[in-house]
Length: 377
Image 1 (tube, helix red, strand yellow):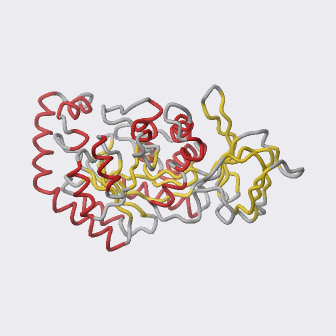
Image 2: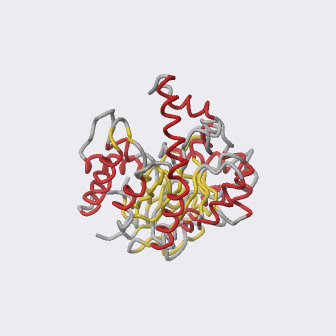
Image 3: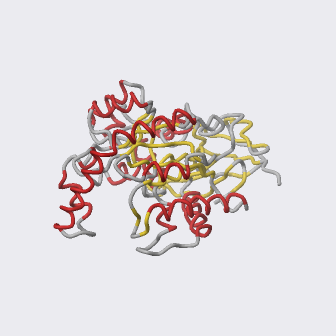
């Protein structure tokens, strides 16, 4: 099937500028960006054309595989439902982030992981997916079973990114134990939280250091990108650097972000943080980091549609990155961090992963999405 396309009268967001003109696609690749209108092709009516977004961290898949406590959904159907939501949000490359810890809605994590991966692979094999899917394995160092979970998946060719997490009460995101208690009060009584906190802290003491070293060694041995998670202090960043980390995910303080910048790490934050106007857990604001030059990548985290909305907010005042600069946070920068050199920018020779949208009352309305020149949404 031909993937030759011509978009005329579009506002094309390149890495350097917004060009009002024509974009040409042949055989699924961008061949030209030209100023001015063309008599041929599709009149975009002044809509924006941006590169398909690249999402390095989304927790969304497991919500489709286990939508209610104790409920397991058909894994292929779940993969397609997740994929449809991702693609219609303008995300053409997604790193499905699988948490290697505990349980999800009453389903043990070990029972979730293989079905999620198998469902994605079955859907991919039968050309049922709209976006490109890779795997990001989120490794909870305090979980006694994390290396067992990791061993099942780490050699899957879809795995491109590992992250090192520690959600123990008293650590990182939950440095203030009361934050952890508030996050879990809907599931446990105060007495149960006391017991659980003691168990988590004992497990962290017994396993975390050894697991950090083992996970970092696995990443090095397989040439996988490695991220740290919820760095709170410069000391956390120093530790991450010693392990070979290249991405600091969700630093919780400005001082940790500044330390990450000084070490040359890519700084990743959640787009919902921008859209909401701050962190839901009281940590540093992503827009504040962007304004300080301490933000490189935005990920959808838990709301796929948040990515483009966050871009539009950061492009304008008060942060004022401009659209090319804000778009880099969800396209060129994550592509570079993940080693994907065939996408992430509107430039001749790259894959024609494209999103067409317009702003309506300040909210982006996605009109169409293409992956490698093929319309997928």
